[in-house]
Amino acid sequence: METWKAEGLGPRQLKKAKDAMLKAMQAAQTRREEGTAFLYFSPFSGYVNPDATARLDLIHAKHGGTLTPANLKAVVADLESAAKAILAAL
Image 1 (cartoon, one colour):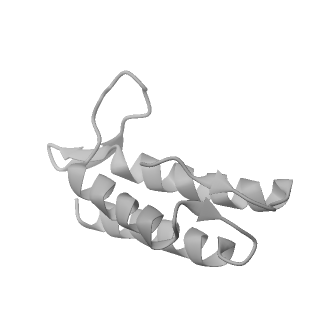
Image 2 (cartoon, rainbow, N blue to C red):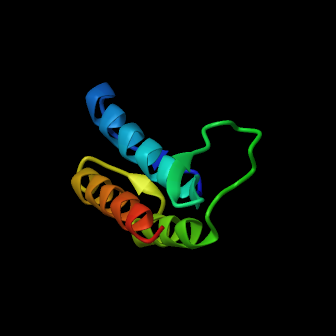
């Protein structure tokens, strides 16, 4: 996932964005083994679903990599939608 730049957001708004990004990255690090899905949260696991990465990069490009008060709701909605779609595809 690419780095985002925040402009003009307060602490509560940043928390919303951070939580949505965390959900999306956790979904990207999820993989199914032996019929169950489990999460890798270790920074040392190295596993990231390439389809999920592409989906998250598209969201980053769509919004120009910048979080503003004007686009915050759209970015959060896109990230939450992506996380659900990534998990559903497993």
